[in-house]
Length: 428
View 1 (tube, rainbow, N blue to C red):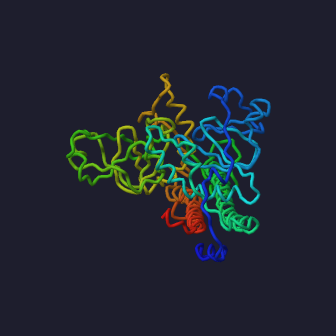
View 2 (view 1 turned 60 degrees about the vertical axis):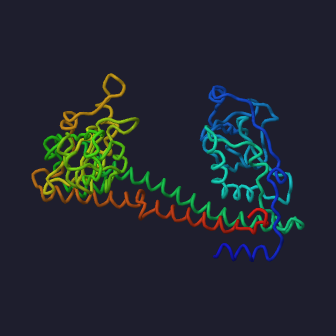
């Protein structure tokens, strides 16, 4: 389907009139409520949704706010401060009084049609907002904004055209949502199989496939200090010395990059001088890197390297003898140990931190330790299965994430084409 030719066919030569939004829809005010009151009034499952700034929402009962402040019509909510965006909502709601909303009292205006058009133009309003110290827009910015009304002198035909555009865009939205929900289910499935395939505890009922894979083989819990060839931390060259950074060829990994999970490149590089004049050390590819410290939830996270690199001092590198240990197997196991690793590193200060001694003493399961060849085969089979799930749920070049991204781009492409109405000469 060519969006532009389909729009031309849909319009079939009819007039398109551009009208100010404030003349097309009814604007409603919000409710006077503070953040503290919202928190106090919130009740899970309550019928009225109150929108505040950003992604902040609460749910309240009908008698918690004045009846006059409750909107019951399908509406476009204008998020006017910070992140400027529009949201469609068709259940009872209200919002803080610095925001506003629009609904239609005209049967010939499809509110969702206007919503989709406003979404197309979000960047326009974000540009206006960026001129303020705190990004924000005012009611005249939206009231005076012109929207295209096809066939304005024939309400029935106008509504039919609007409804067809909404139908197409709703279908794209539904497909994207379906894929997103599928991705959530696949991630849950991945987490389940990862946990089961790495549950070697004595006395526990093992996953049937794991039981078959082990085939009665012994599983020995060994400390990482005995399993790894080396465990060491990195360092940061003096950031004031440009000769340590400019033109660098050695990838340098920061703590936050552990969230990549599979590291194929880094944002920063250091020079040979930077490497030689700091505690940074080379880490071979196919190693495991663990965050010793970091803001928020970083500490205890692990990543696997696909390139040789260096790291900062808040990361520990674990290298392995590839003839005995599949480093990806250790990576996947340590992923399941995130909470446990954080617990042993909690400390008394609240911030806490892991150190090399803690990591060296941490135990990991090694199947069939007296038969390296069989042990490696078991480890590699577990990695093969988990890699498949990982690709399906996380890869942006394959799997569901890529499919979702393609569908979003397709949706935006057709949405833009379906709203490519001819503008009056004065507006061009």
